[in-house]
Amino acid sequence: MRKVSCAGYRSTVPDRTATHSRKEHQMRVASSPARAGKKLYIVAVVMTVMMAACSTGGADRGSGADRFADIPEMTLRVQSANAPDTAPSRAFTVWQEAVEEATDGRLTFEMFYAGALAPLDEVEEALSSGLVDIATHVPAYSPAEFPHDSTVQRLNSLVEPAPLGTLQGLGAQTEFALGGWAEDQFAAQGLKPLLVPAAMISSMQLVCGDEPVRSLAEAEGIRVRVPSEHHGTEATALGMTPTATTNAELYEAVQRGIVDCAVMSPQDVRDLGLVDVIDHWMLDQQAGFSGFSSFHLSMSKSTWDTLPVEAQRVLWDTAGEAYLPAITEGYLNDVAETMSQAADAGVQFHSWRDDLRERMLAHQSAVIDSVRGEKDDGEAVVAGVVETHEKWAKLVRDLGYETQLGSFETWSSGSAGQLQLDSFIGSVVELREAHRP
Image (tube, rainbow, N blue to C red):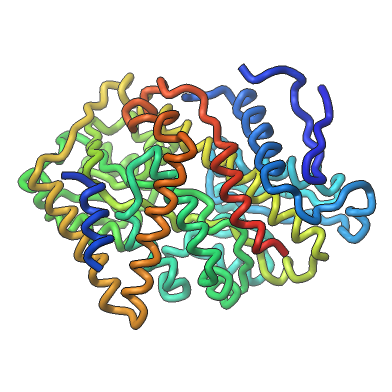
């Protein structure tokens, strides 16, 4: 093993060498208004963290023992909303190691999983009160307190399909949030945002039990579990009947036919064991249910305000350089693994027919138009979101990710090769540098 120093951080790495479509819909909107083993995964993420740190030039990050002088010894209570062996929770492990390395062990995490300290709809209150110091949370459950987040969710049909859209959406919405809205709205709720968003699901998937849903006729009256009110309006537009079945209830509900289908992320299909009880997966690259990005990483503002600036900088820097690449790579690899498991289990994959596809695109365009009309600055908001997403779509293509990742089918089959996120993460880290404490 050897020690590598970059931008004031020291990382330990092995001493070896590294072996009519949705697009048309976006254009109308703009103009009208591999799976990997855990050991290899950790090594890849550590290398990405090093390269991302190097790309920023390490402005004013200091070096040597003197940079720890003002950092108190502190154990932070950290909650992952997910179970331990999931991409968000594995990312916390990578981040914890980076924080401990960067502070010479003065800052450590006490981890809690699967909402052990506070359920998802109470996490913001737990952070505000100081019950939890750091947590992943979902403001979509509290749209009145986070109205701008709610607006962004309604515009997520602008995000391209995975896997390219995962990077496009992360970059664009990070830039949009850093424009000012996140800091103000989160501070009003007693939170310090660290990553907004922390993850990007570029399109939610429709999975079903006994029968596929490919057309308006097949969609009529179908009972479908939806993860948010916004997805409920999309389901209703297709003639479906949305339900609010919880994750804990969903496996049995699908198995017993209480719900016919579910709108969810590919990762949740796997993590909830639904591969065992679904027979059909609707996979359409021209249209689909909107993505979801209301998954953020924040800190209790009261805890944040007690920390010296050096500690704040460590948490801010490593959130972008360690947690973000870990969860992004984990999510993308989990998608590929889930699709492979589903295919092996005999799940059938279907495309939507034209009538279903056209109805969804028309509904999503109407939602975007409604955002324009219901806010005083609606035109400017939509124009800004469109412009930022177009900018990041071009950027990730210029960085070579369209060639590297290929189509969703190529990526999900595991044939796209090893994911290299360093150039993308470097671009996001550079963007965050101007907002460093």
